[in-house]
Image 1 (cartoon, helix red, strand yellow):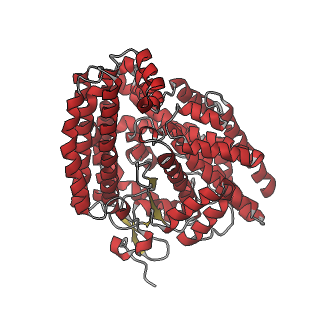
Image 2 (cartoon, rainbow, N blue to C red):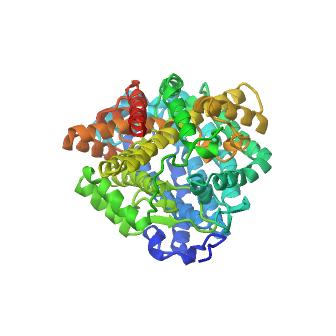
Image 3 (cartoon, one colour):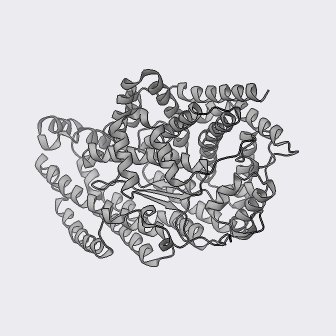
Length: 602
């Protein structure tokens, strides 16, 4: 049977494996009608300007009007984004996505008077209104958070200018996304069986798991060729993104772009630094894992393209998407009937776009909370065990968004980025335990232990490395330096070597990894993968030990949205992220599993 040399087109995929966007809008024409409706409504919000300090009723009417428009805007954005990501070669949906982003910027500009105007009031007066007036009671935490921002809130005119810069500061990421997903041309290589295949984002990741070292090295080197070729372009885009974030932070009177980013979720820079410092003091398990990989692979030099391949002689089973659905449902049974019922609805009602197709956005994501509409998940399925874990991971996000969106009012119907990775890695941990409990062979146990160690490597250590990298490059720019691809490369190589240890040989290609990571455009996002991983490990242990009581606390966490501060929501669930306990627990578990592996192989 001939192996296709290019990816299938979207229409060639069965409908049940493509998401159903009719749950948002029945057609593009319905989207256009909603777009024009909200476009006409936005200017009316200006009528509230200058009136909000008169009485509480004006504030209530304004918040209601803003929410009505905000809900529609979120739905417009969701539909346009998912349509664009389905086929990034269709200019129609690129245009719709761009238009709605412009409209959101306009909305932000028109409503920019709200915060400065409210902050003219005394905090005590607003607190009193929230206690006494029914229409404002639910906004108590919202206003508390608003007054927390007072030192970094500018005048109405200045806030409007900042709002108008949003589209400009988004240009580097939007260009990066289009360039890497639609325009970048990857080479063709031999797949090791005599078939010529075109490298893609999905096929690159799949190749890294191949037992054929020659094939994965060729795939690795081929994948990086365009990133090396356009290194100057990528360095310019990343610098543009950094400078945009530094500009906004300085204007808002923050000490750094990092402080500004963390401030949004009321996270202290110390939480970030504690993570990086704790990991830097605990490289021993990571370096031990590097040495073990090198030894078992029996290679003179361990290379970055060797870091994902399974090192134990166990034939990895291929998992169809439909098989994976059943596995994930069984693994998540400890979370109870309601959780499983919603999960089944997501699987059966086309909330998920499954297979990689030509011009589809790479990677995987959950769309997050959009008030009034269920969340969606994008996948690029390759039949690997890793895909099963990705499904569990993204459904963790999906369920978090679903519960938040259905249990919280609009003002709290989302959760902070700091909390985002907890639910996803929680599901991955339950899945791993489920598979280990049902394993009856030494070979399979080793395979699954290795899977966990790869999770620790990629989600905990690697993301902490990324977090340290971000801190360093931003610090250099904030000190007045302009970074080129040379500086980006050298710093990345230094950190990669430090985290993997002396047993790792850092290839030239790996030095360009900074050029392909979209999360470097998300402004200090990545550290939260590591903190989320550590928090979820503790939560899973509590669910296993304490049963129903811990499950109730966890489900309360999923329902909390942004109704309180992130650290407090986690603390209520049983995890104190200001302590070193979650990080230490993760590192201790990694050491324990390395001990178990060595017992089995010896």
